[in-house]
Amino acid sequence: MAATPIAPLDLIAADSLLSEEERAIRDTVRTYLDAELRPHIADWFEAGDLPVRDLAKGLGALGVLGMHLEGYGCAGTNAVSYGLACLELEAIDSGIRSLVSVQGSLAMFAIWQHGSEEQKQQWLPALAAGEAIGCFGLTEADFGSNPSGMRTAAVRDGDDWVLNGTKMWITNGSVADVAIVWAQTDDGIRGFVVPTSTPGFSANTVKHKLSLRASVTSELVLEGVRLPADALLPHVRGLKGPLSCLSEARFGIVFGALGAARDSLESAIDYALNREQFDRPIAGFQLTQKKFADMTLELQKGYLLAMHIGRLKDEGAVTPQMISVGKLNNVRESIAIARESRTILGGNGITLEYPMMRHASNLESVLTYEGTSEIHTLVIGEALTGLAAYR
Ligand SMILES: Cc1cc2nc3c(=O)[nH]c(=O)nc-3n(C[C@H](O)[C@H](O)[C@H](O)COP(=O)(O)OP(=O)(O)OC[C@H]3O[C@@H](n4cnc5c(N)ncnc54)[C@H](O)[C@@H]3O)c2cc1C
Image (cartoon, rainbow, N blue to C red; front, side, top):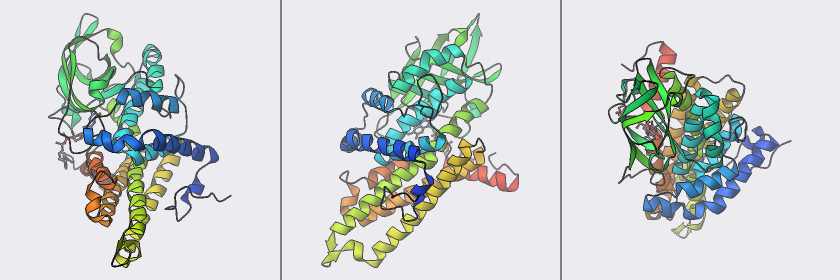
């Protein structure tokens, strides 16, 4: 049975690809976010601050924190439902989606996939409920695209581990209760579950951001952080540990970025229908309609790509190369849509009264984090040629 599109932009009825349950989850998330978060997002963005703790409790009750994980208080939905939630979260703001991505796909997934039973019991229910906040420390100031060079080190001292180093650009860092920290050991790169109350751990919030202002971004400082032996994530060694988590978060971005694009385009169409120049709505000008048509094509193609990758993920058949295709394309097209939508508003488009400029500036971060667009290009280049151009 053909579905009634929830969005007027769904010209090809892509909504009909969703099950009843997926549609219900998507609609529930959208309704909650529109009522609870949308009225405040421009103010949070302008203030450069986000009430993460309050929001996390609401998002936990909504069931979106770690929603695609099974057990331990997590909702256990399929990957497509998680993607749809990310799309709705990013239709509010990329900073809100980042909060949820880092909590669920990076911090919680690391523990869920690579942690001990005790670590899971201790942290996952609280993180799923939003009663605890998690962060994920991989990047360092001198090692972003190439995390294998990280200098943060963990050394054995008796049964304990002692961690020293700094991490940079860590989402939720200053508000986190627990940090997943990746460090060099004599056994290669290993992950550690670090309660942020541990002596020697501190976090400094990054100020003066012009992107993702409604998101907490931090430097983590670890000075002689002493942890018991059981703080180590026991089930993974090497860079494949953090990369497995990044694949999860990147999947969310394949869907998520389209939310920022959809919100920009919807707002631009609404504005253009109501704004008159030369005694007629600017929506009636051919140049404006060409912009709308081109943006709609990319939005719908991006959605089909996301859905295809989502279905493959649910079948267990997704590869990192597929996720690179999705992330590279959908973030690139979404930022182009946000910028083009901005032009339709003329001067009004540069204010926080309308969402496009905020989305476009946020998507600058999304283009860079979780693998830059250049690195995803090289992943695809390697898949096509067999030649790795990274180094
Ligand atoms: C708002 C925000 C939030 C973030 N949150 C987190 C987080 O929660 N946890 C975390 O661990 N990290 C996080 N990051 C870090 C993010 O993942 C890194 O910024 C990203 O990996 C890029 O690293 P870099 O900034 O050091 O840039 P660099 O690696 O220095 O790259 C600079 C430029 O050089 C290009 N480049 C690098 N190597 C190559 C190459 N081999 N070939 C071609 N071009 C190349 C890059 O594509 C880029 O254009 C966040 C970043 C931001 C901005």
